[in-house]
Image 1 (cartoon, rainbow, N blue to C red):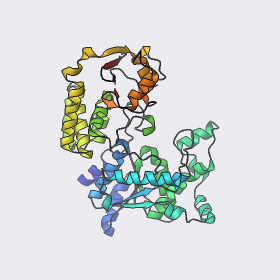
Image 2 (tube, one colour):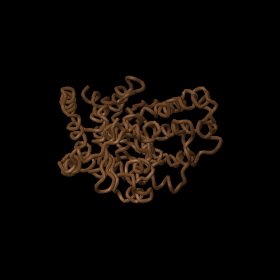
Image 3 (cartoon, one colour):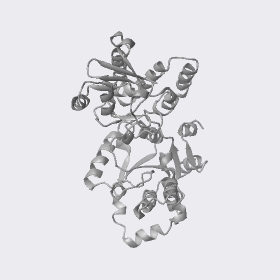
Image 4 (spheres, rainbow, N blue to C red):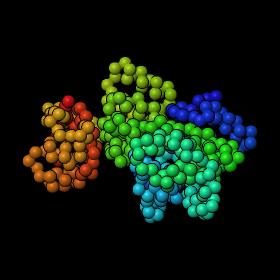
Length: 402
């Protein structure tokens, strides 16, 4: 029972509800390992703490001796998948797919034991299908079933174009589960439809259908949208310790509990103690420090976590940077759109007297920091918030105020 409870911890959706117990019992009865599938389409090579929410759950299954199968969608990434928004995603070249896949696999070792993982590429079987076989697979799914996917339904209702390859994409992803004989497929809640498609196709091929386990989507540093590289709101699992610490300290207080539950490896009792401290009025900054050090210890080391805290304190909490040294700037005086502004435009507004090209050079050299984190992307989208501290060059410090 303790094992079941641990495996269910932080899981948002299990389909069917009692499926995990049944699969574990089946594995015990048949004296075999469960096949746990996680699919990646290598559309961007950087893994972040949002991805790690799922990876850490995979590690729990791995520690129990089950077989983790990482499925790299090098075929499906070349046709372009639906983004979950109102347009399709641009397909990648074979070279881009290969580079991103290699980067993914290298980063996986930060969380799971890659030597014990089976890594497969869906081009191994999808490239070999004849057109007749493709049609036979497509015939097992109805248009009505595909329209249950929220973004397809929304786009159809709004008369926004949906390309045929987008409709085929989840069917091919479901067929991957048939090929590897998956017992469990894992992903974020945004992958629920595609994962259930795997169940559907396995049933039509007269196989025991996989269960689906969906983990919650971790919010990014802005506290609003899910963590995503395209939104510039991520903490990468390969970020340097000082950068990890600074980014974690910048999260809004409303995200503390979510980060505590989803990004740390504190025990349940330790999490409860920290939650009680927060509820009893402890300074949220001190709680964030605990979370930041725990994250860095997972992906680097405890020594580096201590050093990152010391660096942060020296840079941003010591008397060197007392509050009086920060120039207060009212957010309402900054021209922005829905509380977002490009980094270069923010610097232009704050550091008057410096040319845009000079500010660009400062950004590209790493001389601009947002809440202690260097940002070298000139046009990075910055989410403006009350209390945000901006450092430009060596002597210009600003704090944004509502």
